[in-house]
Image (cartoon, rainbow, N blue to C red; front, top):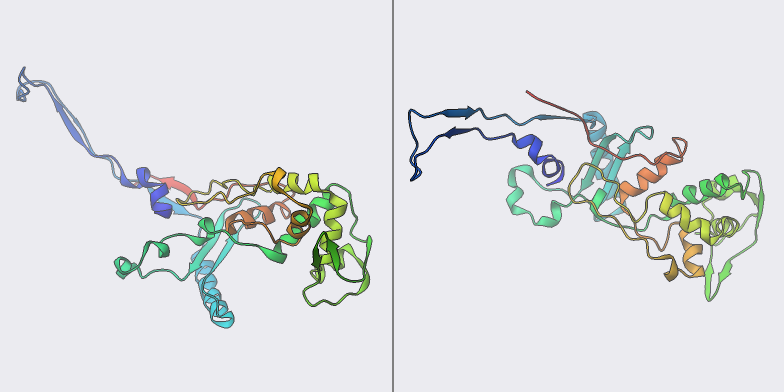
Length: 269
């Protein structure tokens, strides 16, 4: 499974064998022509994982799960310029020495297989799209006066408090849901959906691990105005953690959607 499953052929190596001539009924001819092919050892994987970062990530994740009484969680650390994965840990996990006591659910890598609603961490992706399309500028002003009505739904800030005239930068700083709905209206429904596809949602990242989920981006024909509104602040969409970090890395590295990877190189012993 996982890394070993993905690179099984490389790790396993090749068995050796002997070819020899046989008579008409299939018996080997001992003085006949023989050819021996020696077995080959499996190859070694050199990972991108930084042991120190991995250990720190696991420690901090344990603290976070305990603090918030969460059932599970993941931490992924990546180089945004290359998408080399420096740490990837999900908890709870299984005891390597007693793996047979755990169900298959524990073997699933939640970072690549589970889907979740990203929430406010999604906001910079929509903001970056609006900036890229020149629909807004960082210092543009939005008048945050109260809840926003979309059809039969009311959208409010997390604390239902409003500051009046605020900049686009402040919308991100205070994580304003109603401000993000405004950004979405400026960007437009067509561009919102287009950028969701550009960010790779609903697609495999093709990370070199077995068990990745592609997520689900429902067809454009099934979207309603409320869907375009809520997606601006990361609700109403299901993505995997690895998709999220890949998309986020693209707004750091200049707009490049990189393929995440765990194996830096493969060597032969």
